[in-house]
Amino acid sequence: MNLEKIQNNGLVLLGCGKMGSAMLAGWLEHGVALNAVYVLDPYPSDWLKNLAAKGLNLNTDLPQDPAVCIIAVKPQMMSEALPSLIPMVAGDCLFVSIAAGTSIATYGAVLGGDAKIIRAMPNTPAAIGMGMTALIGNALISAEDMELARDLLSAVGQTVVLEAEAQMDAVTAVSGSGPAYVFHMIETMARAGQEQGLPADLAMQLALATVDGAGALAAQSTETASQLRANVTSPGGTTAAALDVLMDEATGFPAIVSQAIAAASARSKELGKS
Ligand SMILES: NC(=O)C1=CN([C@@H]2O[C@H](COP(=O)(O)OP(=O)(O)OC[C@H]3O[C@@H](n4cnc5c(N)ncnc54)[C@H](OP(=O)(O)O)[C@@H]3O)[C@@H](O)[C@H]2O)C=CC1
Ligand SMILES: O=C(O)[C@@H]1CCC=N1
Image (tube, rainbow, N blue to C red; front, top):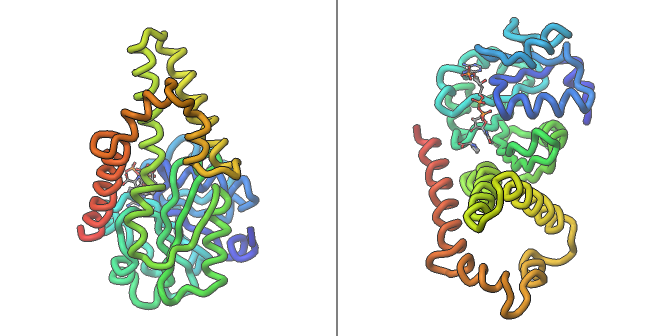
């Protein structure tokens, strides 16, 4: 990560909840100095207070011209939280928002037409350095700005730059919210194992290890997900019996996952209007 500009000018983090703290942990691990970080959060966690005792700037005055300001409050808090950032626009600050729904135009309306804004969508596996973040910037974003934003988000996982902001609702629905779908899959597999007579802890251990192993195999293998699925499926065997249920176009995963992702994407669009 190119730390020089951050060390010299500072990094502001607005909102340090689940996503903000996951990113902050990654930046500190990658060498961002505590005294270069300025966090604004009305009810800081004990973890954050402990970092403040060691040098992080918590709920203090902000630097005039920080290198970057990361916006990590809920979309519903945006109108209350954003005005505190307006003084930074006069400098060369790069604004990076991770909020679902909130459009670049919305930030532009509050921060003004000169604000350099990147919209990003990470996900919670960022907490273990395995996040996935998609980014898109406004017309004022230079290659150097995008590199700085990617460097910051690369500290917590993979990054990809989108072709258009319109892709962000679908991205939010697939990878932003996606970890929750997988966690629900773990819950439901474990519950179904119990229904088949397994003790709860064993059923959960099997479900967790299976999702972990299958995800890692899919990520590392040169074979497609479809081929990996076929590799498990013996003709006339147990997997085929299960996939007859799960792959049913009308009642299985194709229909239900499609509906779920369409609902998340629609909600992202709605959040953009509110
Ligand atoms: N969670 C996820 O999986 C993902 C979330 N996001 C986006 O990230 C953003 C944050 O989500 P998440 O971390 O889950 O939410 P959290 O509620 O955990 O974090 C938001 C933080 O902002 C604080 N806050 C509220 N108002 C202000 C304010 N005026 N100034 C500064 N801080 C404030 C909150 O404090 P308090 O709790 O005291 O109100 C809280 O600590 C959202 O916009 C969400 O859309 C994006 C991708 C994935
Ligand atoms: O549920 C939400 O709105 C946020 C955005 C993506 C994940 N969590």
